[in-house]
Length: 95
Image (tube, rainbow, N blue to C red; front, side, top):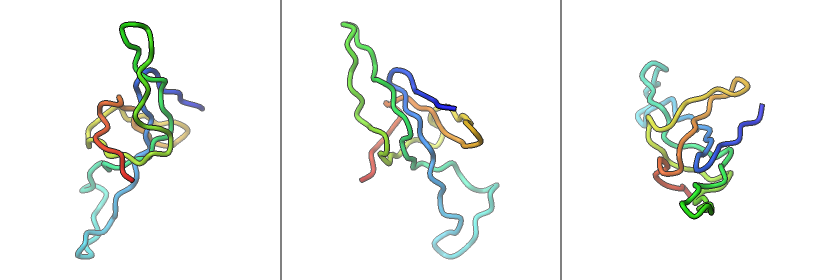
C-alpha cells in the first residue's frame, strides 16, 4: 500500500533508540519512550495559501528529523509503524 500525505503533512518512520543506557543497563520495552528521531518517507505538496499557490515544503524525502514524543498520528501500513505529522510539528533537521 502506498501512502501519500496531503498538503503540509509528512510521513515519518521513527528510528529506534538504543536498548542499553550509557552505563550498560538494558532498558525493558515497557520503560522505553517513543523515539524522537525519524526519517522522512513521504512529503505532501505543501500548504495551500489564500491566493491558491502552495508554499514549498522545508523538508524532503530522506531527511532525518527530530519531532516531539507525542507529535502526529501513529499509523500502521503493511505491518510497519509510521507517524503522520504536520510540517510545523517537526522541530529540526539533523545533518
